[in-house]
Length: 387
Image (cartoon, rainbow, N blue to C red; front, top):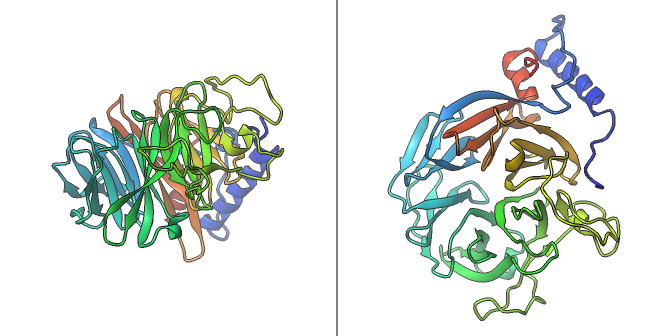
């Protein structure tokens, strides 16, 4: 596959970067023995730092360096990165999904019991007077907000996207300055064989260019699709609820290999290359390919992290969609279903991107916290132990 392999020499380059970083944090005249990078950079540059028992955790997101945990018990809890409770909102009606707003000032929660989006302030989790019942939405597995294309809707602050696997669509609503939700077509629907279709919508995230990344957990696809979510005014039929769908368009991660772009150009995972006519979808454990991708997050450097649930691992790609690394095992990252990521600022000019990664182990009733090798060195003044 075109983007599957990582550039040769990555381990050597990583070892040099690690040595330089150790020297930087250790100070002049202090020598620290750097272990051989095998295992540090080739497949496991993240280390489990802590495990928190939480048998009700459904999804996690990060906003303003705090962790927000949505619970099947009907609560949303704001926590420190050490999992200490800051504030809690109870009484949610069968919540199933959440996301943070574009500027981290709001948290959007889908309440299945009330068939509505509830909006909470991220500071104190107080309800915002803009919650809305959406009876046309059947169920929601994931939520996202994305401002791309919102200028086309007068008075809109952002678009809110709701992955609705029961209806086989991803709904789009304009969230207005007045706090109302206005239906504005679909990002995608499940019919069709091209990348513009999403058969089993899952995790959603906004990439570094303001595009929307969408997990398609259909086991005959196993993709992460990159969309320009701007409503397409030429997409008029077939209608959805009597209105034009105005769907988004799948766009390449990088310069396409052919014209028009192949499926492999607009997706992460195993997909048809240019001119390939015998492609058949599959589950895969190969590097850069997936077995039921359920969650996706993006760090400040634009790298894309995908929870590869069927393979019990997390895979990382560059902003251009090039496979970079993976980490995890059945014991350490069992069937990750939701991811949250923290970029850690250590000075006014330097950031350890992807410093902490939280994932939900729903079957094990745990939330697990991982630390990057770079952040471990910064915090402990020594290299992480080899895994």
